Image 1 (cartoon, rainbow, N blue to C red):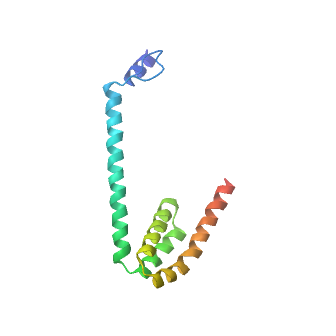
Image 2 (cartoon, rainbow, N blue to C red):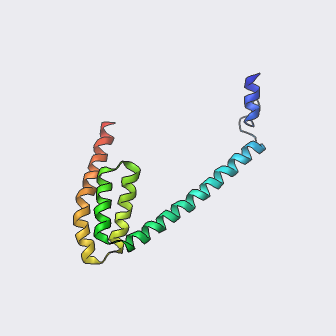
Image 3 (spheres, rainbow, N blue to C red):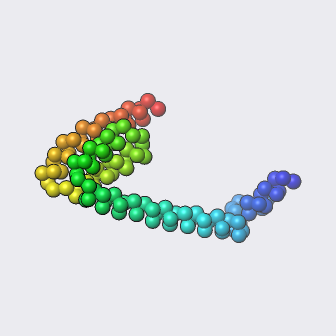
Length: 122
């Protein structure tokens, strides 16, 4: 009895190969679509914000902070720091960008090597 109730609650009938799209399923799909649109807008806003910060804050100060984050932070944070370092380098003048690259490249090599080693150990 409970199996039939659970199947009915999820929009499935006994013997169906594919789910039927009852209002429950339609509502869930609509919610996923709405959440995806919101997430896309949030990601776009954060991308715009980091671009503005990379242009407004002094490049050396920004790189000092981001270099420490990319070196010591865990996966989602250090990837965001690396992405912002790229934006700082792109918005800097050529002499400043060369000086920044001398600071950033050793840390990037270290982070990449550590990721490879961690993946090999797993």
